[in-house]
Length: 211
Ligand SMILES: C[S@@+](CC[C@H](N)C(=O)[O-])C[C@H]1O[C@@H](n2cnc3c(N)ncnc32)[C@H](O)[C@@H]1O
Image (tube, rainbow, N blue to C red):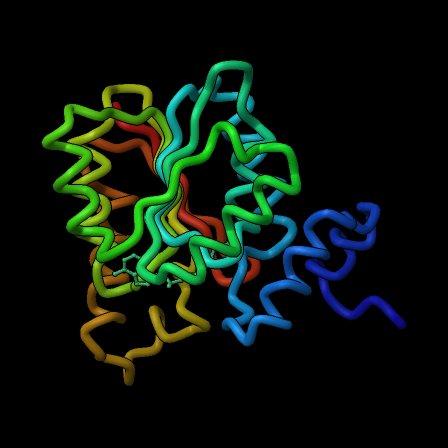
């Protein structure tokens, strides 16, 4: 197949990741939405977790565990991943896939509304040094607030899909979730508490560090 764009070209440089392909297959066969993070950003997540030396990672939105495996691959010994997921059956599949990948012992799933789980984590005094936000778009600004609350200076915050397939920059799009995403993106770029950048490849990725 001829290579037609930059994303295909960069993907073609990497070998097929059989473990992650199996996760995608399990998502398909279970009739779940095919909205796992793109392979290039999955590799970036692994790299960011590794270079940040994160010890406690919080993921918001597990689906079938694709990004969970990418995050876990970057962790050193003794580090943990907590993942928040709305649906029990999704969390169950993610847990199976992470266990298959050898990360069953370091991941914990909390099922239900992420905003509720975040309240619980806060009440328990839990803190994190890496956040991956990849759930319902309308709550991204609230998830960012929670990351600022549960994270300390130096913590990394990553958010996927900030372009919303072009809707974030379409003046004719004005749904509440688009408005929320625009607010999230503007804060990544200009909130004085953050040092942030927004990458436009795939569906857009926001990366920030708490100052
Ligand atoms: C884009 S998918 C996550 C993909 C996953 N991060 C990956 O790359 O493998 C979004 C996930 O967020 C979950 N979700 C949606 N709304 C949620 C909420 N309010 N609280 C917790 N999880 C939610 C969905 O059930 C879905 O599994």
